[in-house]
Structures are given as structure tokens and as C-alpha cells.
Image (tube, rainbow, N blue to C red; front, side, top):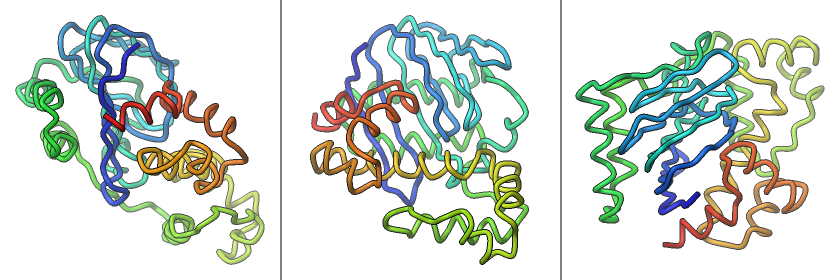
Length: 245
């Protein structure tokens, strides 16, 4: 599998864009709503909830997916927190094929922009997605969890014991764990791991893998490599080489 380019937006936009130039099969599970956009032939996406085939396939955040393409594919990730509005309508569903709508076809036009190295391609991708599904940070059903997420995003080391957070919010640790998973959509520990992944991804194009792992709060570089392989089906080294192009 060849990754021609890996482009990502700044943290405030909560999106990442990858381009795979050749047929491939990938297995990944990221805390992001995933839009696989086939630029040539239909692609197939399979999860435990079902299997669909089409030119544009949406998979909800937190769902493991197996994606098989027979040609080049753009993959747009919309963070499950920054873009809750994108995944909430699909939360109880499996992958969904959007079909050959005009908006879906316009997303396919990004291939030419990507190959011509337009700097605005990732911004364009996010803007065009609004014709297909909502984006943005929809409110949570619990303001206390919203407060907790805000504090964790600002935390340097992401080291916040569950007991301390529960005490501050007036909850027991068990109640906080259950409520977080039910309302946010995944366990707190997995959310923290995803946040570390996001932080290290933003550092890959400015430093070494070792420094990216350390600054993002991973135990070590192998821990970061394993996490990236599960989240994106790409290793940090592959993405770092793509980002340097």
C-alpha cells in the first residue's frame, strides 16, 4: 500500500486527510467518523454491524472497520469530539454508503487538487463534507463531562486519575466510567489514548518519532507505533514520510 500524501488540519478543526494511491485492504479503529472516498472503483467497508459498497462510505467513530479498495482512496477523519454532530446520527448504525450524489462526486474531485499539491485541499475537504453530513461539536447530554473533556484537552501530560476527576465532578469512579462511555461514546481510557494519538500526529511533521511519542504522553515509541497501527492502519514512520512530501 502506498500513501502518496497525508495532510491534516490544525487541532481546532479536528480533521485529518489521508490519500492511498493504490488498491489496499486496511483494518483500523479510530475515534473519528471516517469517510472513505473512492476515486476510481467502488470500495467495500465491513464492520461487525454490516458490510456496504459504494463510492463514499461513512463509518461511525469508534467502530472497527475493514476497508477494501480497488483503486485510489481519500480517507477523511472527523474527530469524534470536535465533530460529534457527524457521528451521532450514525451511532447505532454500521457503515453507510452515501451513493452517487452530486456532493459525493464533488468530494471525488479532491483527487486532482491533492495531486496538484494545493495547500487548501484539507480545508476544501472539510467544507465539502457539510453537503453530506453535519459537522461540529454537538452538545453532550452532561455538562460535567463537557467540562472534563475541556480540561483534559488542555492537560499537558493527560495524566488525570479517574478517582480525582470523579471526586471533583461529584461522581463515583464507577459512575463516571459508565456515564462517560455511554454519553461520549467510548471509555475514558480509550479517549485519552486517542487524544495522545492526535497530539503525536500533529508532531510527526516537525520532529522525530521518539520526540512525538514522548511529548504526546505515550509510554515509549513502540507504544505509539502499536496505537497508530490500530487507529489508522499506518505506522508513524509511513505517515511521517508522507507528511514530509
